[in-house]
Amino acid sequence: MEKGPFSVEWLAQSSRSGGPGMPGSPPQTPPSVPADTPRDREAAERRSPGHEAESGGAAPGRSRTKFSAAQLQELERSFREQRYIRAGEKRRLAAVLNLSQSQIKTWFQNRRMKFKRQTQDAR
Image (cartoon, rainbow, N blue to C red):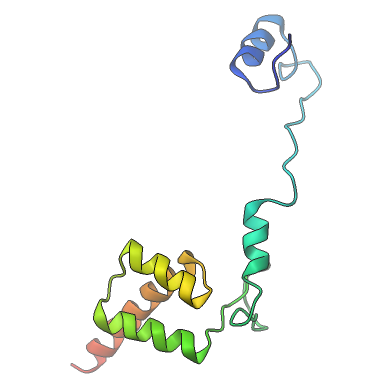
């Protein structure tokens, strides 16, 4: 029975026999990755209200999230209570606001920097 490519047995056999992947042999193609991955589905889910892209200099394939007024109100309320978000609160906000946990984390990072600039300017 031959093991699949890149398994321990396959690598051991191919190194002994000069099999695929060895100098002078045809290159072995890695297994293909399905196009419909959980990451792709999550990206599609984010294309919902509150996730419109703004045209401009954004990196290709990455859109800027435009937060709704209700989302901003809840994020600001949470920020006033605590500047550093805990994991449980991040999960709760992501579920309530229909955003990903990464978006919540990034919003808090950006908001802390804005807060820092505002307090430095006030000095």
